Length: 335
Ligand code: AMP
Ligand code: MG
Image (cartoon, rainbow, N blue to C red; front, side, top):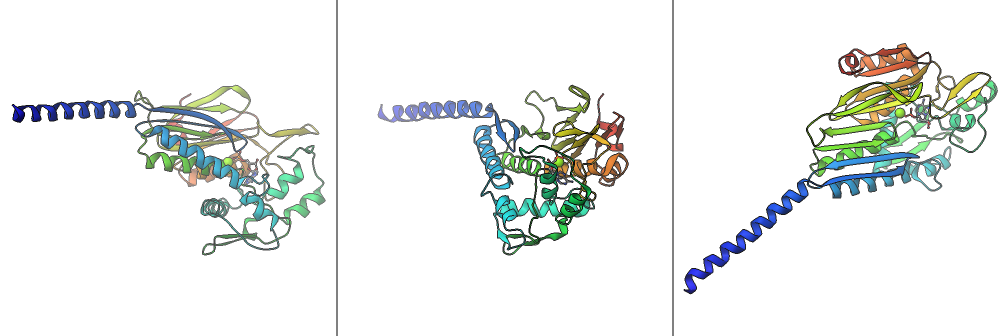
């Protein structure tokens, strides 16, 4: 009697454990995590699906919050602020993440011939962007004085000691054209570490999608018409890629009948003219972020050349609303 009861008890116990495990597995496989936060002075959105979606999502938001705190030049005591305050005086030791994003930004500055340049900080301040001051057109004299404080070659990085040195007093790093993209890349890395196979991360215009939506259909991303908030010029299906747009429609002012936007041409010291919107698709979000800004600065023709050289899909829309597509984008854009 004793002998036959024991195995029965074991098998019931095993059955309970197995069904519990299956139930748990089913539950976790179907975890859907969605969250919106205000970071980097913009809306950040994350949507992740899968076994560890919640843990991954929370970790992503932590990392993005941390990066915002480190890379914001307006936050007193942030790592970027410390670098800027020590300009012309001494190198500043920073965290690995801050060092990495600055190193990446200097590399892209080189690749884009300085059209993207993270040292535009002084010019941003001179034009009154990002501050409470009134935005006005500076004099040519002021612009040429400030231009002396701009130039990615004037930044010294020390890889071994993880220090950043701005060699002239008054220099100021501004990572506004790459930090959001970099944060999205970090998010993607965390999501992948948690084996998330379906997700979308967005920080401002920087978007990356992992895999497809949970119903198997591709993620569809609209490209905004610079002339109208409600309209798109088309959309694309994005899978394991980053897309980013730089535009003249969010931060700008008018003076003497001319529109001045927040993207500055580091070669002239004036806001870039001629382009209204520029969108690029690339494997990494930091790269897409910086390249969209660089192509915006270069103008439609040279901007498109830069995108073509990289063999990337890109769209440029000029101030008259004329749209030009790179050859890769012609295959992708659905109108
Ligand atoms: P985005 O919207 O990505 O094109 O970034 C624009 C922001 O990047 C501006 O608000 C500035 O903070 C900064 N910025 C402006 N002009 C440049 C430039 N030529 N290169 C790098 N960053 C820039
Ligand atoms: Mg950018």
